[in-house]
Structure formats: C-alpha cells, structure tokens
Length: 234
Ligand code: ATP
Image (cartoon, rainbow, N blue to C red; front, side, top):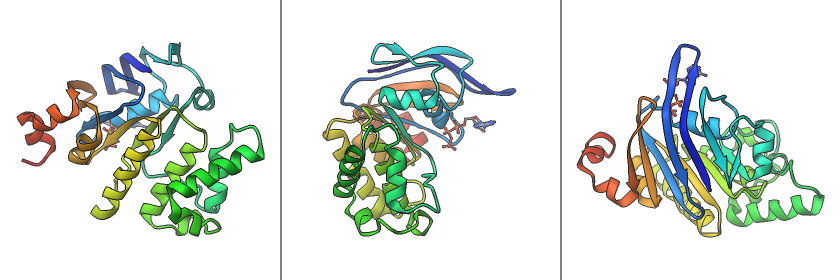
C-alpha cells in the first residue's frame, strides 16, 4: 500500500533520516519505534508532505506522492494524527471534527462522519459543544483521532498517541487503535511506548539516529534481546 524507499531528510545541517526504506501493506498496523530524536516523526511528516525529502521515493497505492502538497496527500487517502494532538483550541469538538472533513463533498457526508466519530468516541459526543482546549489530554487525543478519521483515510498515521496519558487511558487508546484497524483502516504508528506498540502491531521498524536498524514481525522483535534491552526496559 505504502512504500518508502531510500528516504533522506535534512533539517539544515542536521541529518534526520538517511536512506530509510519501509513499507506498509493494506490492513496492517506497522509500528516505528526508537529513541527520542531517532527520526520517527520525520518519517510521518515526510509521508504527509509537511517536510520535504532530500532524496528517495514515497509511493501510495502505486502513485508517487513524494513531492505532493499535504492537502492533496489527504485526498489520496492518507491522514496524520500529529504528535501533541494539535486540536484547534478555541473551536468546539464538533467544529474540530468538521475541519477534519474538509475534503468531504456535502453536509450529509460530514454529519455521517461526525456520527461515526461519536460512536467510536462516545466521550466526544457528550462534549460536542465544549471548546477543545478544555478537554483532558485523553479526550484531546480522541478528538485528534476522530478529526483525522473524518477524511475516511485508508492509511492513518498516528504519532505518539499515548504521550502524556495515564496508563489506563493508554490502554483505552490502544484498544481503539486496534478497533479502527479492524474496521479496515491501515495504520502506521509512531510510539515511545515500544511495548504497547509492539503488542498491537503486525510488523515494526526500529530506528536509530535516522536509520532503520531492525525490522520484522512485531512479536519477534518484542522477543529480541537487543530490542528488549534498548526499548523495553530490561
Ligand atoms: P521524538 O520521539 O523525540 O519525537 P523522533 O524519533 O520522532 O523523536 P524526529 O522528531 O523525527 O525524531 O527528529 C529527528 C531529528 O531531527 C532530531 O535530531 C531532531 O532534533 C531533528 N529535527 C526535527 N525537527 C526539526 C526541525 N524542524 N529543525 C531542525 N531539526 C529538527
């Protein structure tokens, strides 16, 4: 579905990614794990078209999207839930969801999308008129995910959904990620919480200083002694 080949990205003199290749097959949850600054967010931002690449090719469903504008990439069927949620603070829950539906053609389609988001996240329905800045961290994460799903993406890019959340909420969010995947959305997941990410992912890539150092079946990686020592706190 998605293929990233030999991707290189620099921020000025800083090399963020070097020759990174990875792929996502339809129906998968693929996790990207690695330490702070390894380049995980940069991969998602480059796929979304927010960060320009220096070299390499990104293709989605057979079409090259490497230098496409972000709003066109959304129209192709890829949507990102950014790190830190980035909800529109002064807008209500409902207005945030409407913004996520900017590519939809009619009011009915938007209303259907919002109802779907409320079914997935009943908590948001209760708070539909509340300004997004007054939501808790977990609720903001749900809103950011609901907003991204409004565009009916076939590939959802999730950046650190567990960041700053209490352990119980982290579990809840991961359950919802699995549910979204089971209902047909392919997912690329960036996570600091490597053990949670590996527990729900089909496959994973391990990044170190801008390069892929390991990849494979998520269960196998979770049993790999090097991964356990470096990322699973053993
Ligand atoms: P984290 O988990 O901390 O978010 P990450 O693996 O997602 O880390 P990136 O955010 O992709 O890593 O950053 C990769 C490298 O690029 C880091 O060294 C970071 O400091 C650098 N970097 C990221 N964004 C910028 C920027 N806008 N300008 C300059 N350097 C940047």
